[in-house]
Image 1: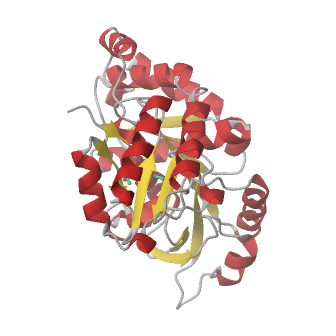
Image 2: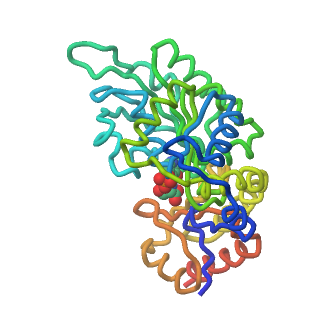
Image 3: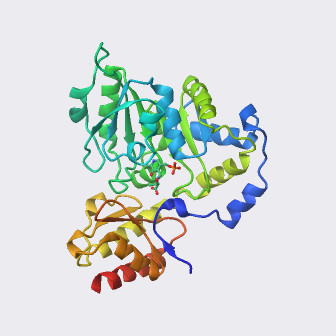
Length: 344
Ligand code: TLP
C-alpha cells in the first residue's frame, strides 16, 4: 500500500533527478579534505549564512553534539528550552557525551526570552557550573514548527555578549523559518556562533546536516566529528544531493506551509481534535485529541489501516508534517480519513 506519510519530513525520498545528480557526483576522500563536492557544499552553505566555514555531518543529532561539544567543557552549564530536540530526542548526548549540566526554561511556543533566562546565568565559582552556552531551536519542532522572532533572538544575542556566552542554533528547519518569514539565512547567521541545519528533512535529501561557524571553530569541530565517528570518505555522493536540494527544493517549501495551514484549519473543525492554530507557522501540525476520549495509538492504527501515517507526540497528541512528497490532493484525502476516524 502507498501510504500518505505525514509522520515527518524526514520520510521524503530522493527524486529521479536527485538520484541522477548523486550518480554523477565527483568524489574524493573527505577525511583528507579532498572531496570536491563536499568542499563545494561547505563553501556554499558558509556563504549562504555569511560565515567563514562549515562542516558536513551525517545527522542533525551529530551536528548539534559536535557544535555544542566544541563550544563547551564538561561540567559547564548550558541553557535550553524545556522541550527542545537536543535534550529530549538525542539520546542524552548533551549530558552523556558533552558532560553538560542543562538548565531548562519553558518557552512560549518554543520561545525563551531574555527576561526569563538572564537572572539564572551562573558565574564561575567554586560551587557552580558556569553557564557558557545558550541553545535555541528554530523552527521549534515540539512547539509545532514555530518561528523564533528575530527581535527576541537579537535580545538574547546581546545578553550572550554581555555575559560571555556562546549561542548555538538548532536550525534543523531554519529553511522553513526563512521561507515563511522572508528573513535571509545570512541575517539569521549574524546572531549565532554556530548553526546546525538538516538537508534530510523538508529539503528532501536522503542524508546529512551541516554545522556552520567561524574558521577556528570549524577546525576544532572537525576533530570532534572524527571522535564521534563522523569522518566520512567519498561522501560527495551525498553532498551532491544536498546541493541539489538547496538549489531546487527550498523556495517550494511555501507550498508545504500552505498545506499545513489547510490541514490544520480543516482538522480543527472536527469534534475531538483541538489545534492551537497560532502555532501552525510552517510545515508541522500538532493536535490534541484528549476531548475525543480516544487513545492516540488506536487513532494511529485506524488511520494506518486507511493508508495514512502520523506519529504520537505526547500522551494525547498527534503530529503531522507536510513535505515535498505530498500534494494538496494527499492532504485533502488525509482530512477525509481523520473525519472518518473521529465520526465513529
Ligand atoms: N527530528 C525528527 C525526529 O527525531 C523527531 C523529526 O521527525 O522531526 N533538531 C530538530 C529540531 C529535529 O527535528 C531533528 C530531527 C534533529 C535535530 C535531529 O536530526 P537527525 O534525525 O538527523 O539526527
